[in-house]
Length: 88
Image 1 (cartoon, one colour):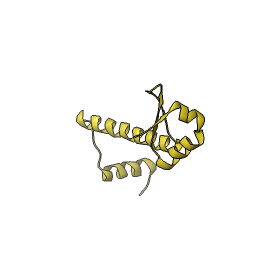
Image 2 (spheres, one colour):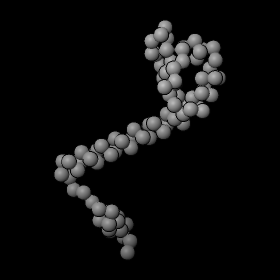
Image 3 (cartoon, rainbow, N blue to C red):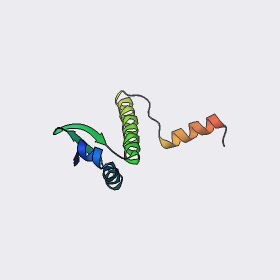
Image 4 (tube, one colour):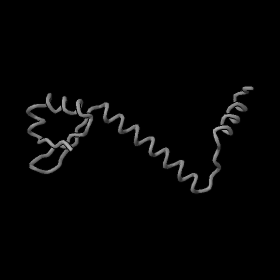
């Protein structure tokens, strides 16, 4: 875990930015000794968001399975798509 003070962020933004890009980890910013903000590179943030979206989809699929909703095999899905799109 990387922790920096708000003073560090204010006085040396370039170093904090470089650290965020190099480590690809969130940097926790404190203000008066208390946690205040989290700073991270856009790339790290976008990867994190994509992971969260994937987890939400997997959770939805698992809940559907637990509710007893119809489950399709890969072969069944291919046949259904072929029928929809008129493929042989």
